Image (cartoon, rainbow, N blue to C red; front, side, top):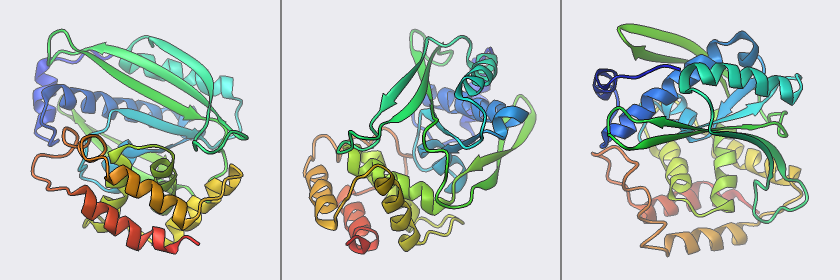
Length: 282
């Protein structure tokens, strides 16, 4: 296990915009975790990363919102128990012994009961050195069901400065349009402000990622069809409008996650997503 010091966290704070020091600490742990996974010869050939952490840290860097977990998908042919054994070996070197690790069947769309995905979820609790008494909770999830991506996987650079050295690793991830297609799925399946923000930010930020709304919707449709789920434009619009109407919950849950100088308006984001993405649904 890597034992961070307060000095490690303060040095890392120069590179990230998060308002709370414990967030900076967790961000550093996530970066070290990502490096460890993709520096491992076996795992780097078997898993790809998706979700908010890689979206913001790599695809849309520099990150505009804080994220606290690692989402992986098995894309190789090795059995799931081999993946778990290798992952536990690598993660314990960074985060220590897991509090829990379990296989579970998860419905990745709330309207889908027929084809739940098999997920390995590992939970780590790390005592904070930045805030006495706080436990940092880091979750690593591995989807072993969706092994075939819609588009070709990408190999992207990631670097992390730590204790005077710069770690350079190549991360295996998804095409940006496929990433956002799975974000559309998440937006439809739950009520979390981060899903709307991620779609909006990818469509409007000045990042180097090239987003093709038609390809995003194609990827979204692909994943929903794999789950035997049909989503019409009307269904999605109704869900989006219900979310944005929740002023105290959905529209406020991003306040603590965004970099401090970002003026984000959920209503504006919803309008952008509606016109750029949902308008393409049948």
